[in-house]
Structures are given as structure tokens and as C-alpha cells.
Length: 485
Image: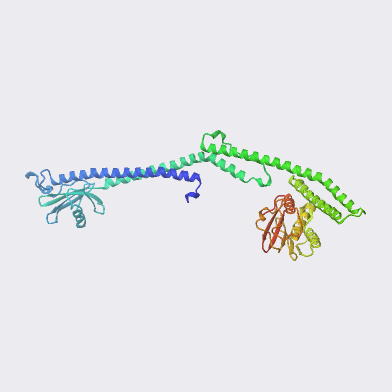
């Protein structure tokens, strides 16, 4: 349980325990020491009282000069809040009396006398006896005198009251000291950990920044450079230095990526014209009536097809570069249901050996770029047609949720290799190893689809196993902000 406590609570609890234990031990030692001291003094008073009860001549309670004989000399001499008992040799009681604080004398009962007799078996050693009732506990001692046993005792009421009073005082003192310690420690620990909390808050804010979305600036700093002489200050300064290095590295990476995007965009743009020229000259050569050999004709045909493929690759790279650069898309109402039907018809024409199904509600609209959204569906359906065997059923469904529109393209093909799933939307990733390949691809189709969906504030996910593959596109109805996961 302690491991789950925050540091502040651990420090307060641990320090309070270290303070409380010595206080309790000190209080206990004080009470026990006082009690032992009071009982020692009480035992001395009991022995003194016993000697007074025996008499100055040491011959028992009836000793003394003849003129002192009389009824008032019979039995033990009375003392306030004390008792005196004389037992005969046969165990019978010669005399007994308890003198209260008000001076009144009370005779002891046979049961109380039996308790006293049992407690004084060891002569000369004071013992405690509980007599009950209003008399309470007594400290008694006994001594044999001729054929009698004289017992004298004093009440422990004053000792018990003094010990109880001191215990109450110590309880109040320890409680007050504990309260002061807890409050003081809470204030001190809170003040000491405040910089550490700033460090934790800074780390949490940094962890919530969307670095995967391209954020490169991190303005959060702990700001504890002035406390660098303390351990917490050093940690804060180290965190600030680390954040500076990370921000510099991210900015350097961003600049490198920007340069790379600019290069790809420029190169793609510059390649469009020469590739168009290559394709044009290939078509021109093929249209020439001059007789060519079979090798020449095949070569010209390959030049034209490869030039067309290269032009498609250049257009894809140029589109990705523009999307990465944040190029604004058109914002207009788009009937997604109609898009799903039209692209499924196109896929059926391109891959007639597959079964194409469409499940849509009527007129589901989003705000976005119709041409780009159509390209998303074309890429997903084309991906299913290229990488699944003949006879595969491909279903396109569109549903209108409360917060997002969901487009699902699912097939019952052999599925995608699990090793490819984490990087499926990366550029130049191909599913050749996972599915039956019937035609070549650049490996940019899914990357373009994901980039277009993100540009619309949505997301795209894939699930695949041996029973088939399912791509789910989620788009916000109004085309603003990220769609829910």
C-alpha cells in the first residue's frame, strides 16, 4: 500500500512516525519512572507506619509504660487513610481498622482480612492488595511481634491519581506535539516538493503534445535554473536542458523533412514534362508506318508503359508532398453514399472476377474534397482487387454515426501478414508477401489514402486476420477536427 502513496504522504507519514515513537517512549518512561518513584516513597511510608504500629519498644501494640495502658492503646495506632491489623498466631484477628481521610474508622470485613493475610505472607516486603469498595487498593507490609503479626498499610489512591494525572497531561502534550508536527511537516514537505511538482506537471504537458502530428516546438519548461544548487533544482535544470535538445532535434528534423518535401515536389514537378515527352515520342514512334522488328516494337511498348507508370508515381509523390505541406483541400458537401456506389462499379469493371457489394444508407454527406475522397475509395478498392484472389467478396459500407461517418471496405481474402500491419500506411509498403499479387504497385496507395483522410480531420485503421481484411475510414460530418477513435 505504501508503494502506491504519493511522495508527499510518504514523507509526512514516515517523519511523523519517527517523531511519534520517541514521544510515546519518552512519555511511557516518564510515567513508569514516576510510578516507581512514588511507590518507593509509599513503601518507605508503609514501613514507617508499620514501626509506629508496633510501638517504640518493639514489643507489639500493647507495649509501653504502665500509665499508657488503657482502651485507647488497644490495637494498632490509627493513621489517616491507612489501615492497621493485628493477627494472632492462630490466624485470628486481634484488631483491625481503616481510617479514612475524614478521620472516621471503618472495620474491615472477613474477606478483606483474608486478602490482607494472603498478601503479607512474605514479611517485611511491601505488597499491593485490592480491598474493593470505597477502600480501594492498599500497599501493606507486615512484621511478627512475639505471638502476633502486625500489618500496616497506606492507600495507593494518591499514587494512582498522580500517575493518571501525569498520563493525561502527557497524552495531551503528545497529541498537541503530533498535531503541530503533522501540520508543520505538511507545510514544509509541500513547499519542498513544489518544484518537483512543477517538474512533473511540465513532463505531463510535454507528454500530451502531439509530436506524432508534426509538432516541433515545446514551450514548456520547469524554470528551476535559479535553484540549481538543490537536488530538485538540478533535476529541473536537467529536464529543461533535455527539452531544449529535443526541441532542437525536432526542429532540425522538421527542417530536413521540409527540404526533402520541397525536393520531392520540385523533382516531381520537373519530371512531369520529360516523362510526358518520353510517352509522346514512344507513341509517335509506334504510330510510324516504318516497319520495325518485333524487338523494336516490344521495346517501344515497354518504354510507353514504364513511362506511364513513372508518371503515375511522380503524380503520387507530388500529391503526398502537397498534403504534407498542408495544402488546403476543397470544402464542399460530398455524398459519400454515391461515391461508394460509383467506385464499387468502377472496381467491378476493373476486377470482374471479384464479387463487389455495397451497403449504404441514403444520402450520407460530409464536408470535404470530393475528388480526394473518391481517390481514397479507389485506392482501398483497388488494393482489395489487386491483392486478393479471384472470387473474393469485397463489401463497401457507409454508416452515419452521431459524431462521425464510417466507411468500411472489407474483404474475405487471405488477410495481410501481421508483420506488415504496423507499417501498412508507410510509403512504399507493399503487401506482395501477404497476398496474391496480380499486378504491380508503387506502394503509395494506402499512404495517399491515409494522408487524405488525415487532411479531412479523420483517421483510417485496418484489421486483418486469416478470415479477411477490413479498412475503416472515420470522417467528421463537418470536416473539422479529428474524428473519434
